[in-house]
Each structure stands twice: as structure tokens, then as C-alpha cells.
Image (cartoon, rainbow, N blue to C red):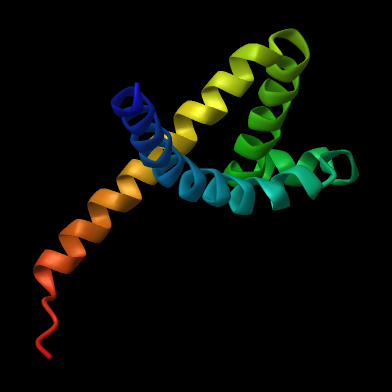
Length: 103
């Protein structure tokens, strides 16, 4: 029984070690997007700027998905967080192999 608990504990720590950095990254990136009031921006400015147009469309889509299927959004956020955390882990490993520190 102790072996099963140890394996579950290892799995939880592995998952959280990849999930938390990705979730923090998503929070840092999405906070300015959530705080920006797109209704105060003129339509002409949105049409001229590709970035603003993409952000407005993305925000509308996220609002729609949040209202219609919140379970799907939670799953997507968890999956994206895990993938971003895994990407950060892989990039860190590559960085450590390319730049060894000689002490």
C-alpha cells in the first residue's frame, strides 16, 4: 500500500511541477488581456490594428466558450498550463546542456 501512495505522490509532484509554471505564465499573459476594456476602443482603431483585432476576436471567443462550456475551458486551461510548463522544462534542460557551468 505504501508503494502505491508513493507512486501517486510522485505523480502529483511531477504534474504540479509542470502545471504550476505554465499556469503562472498563463496568468501573467492573460491578466492584461482580461483587464483591457475593448468597448472603449474605437472600431476604426480595431480595424486598423491586426493585433487589436485578434485580441478582440479572441476575447469574444473566450467569453463565448466560458459561458457555454466552462468544463471545456477548465480542461483547456489545465492542458495549456501543463504543455507550457513542459516546454519550459525542455528549454531549461537544453539551456543547461548548451551552457555548462564550470566551478
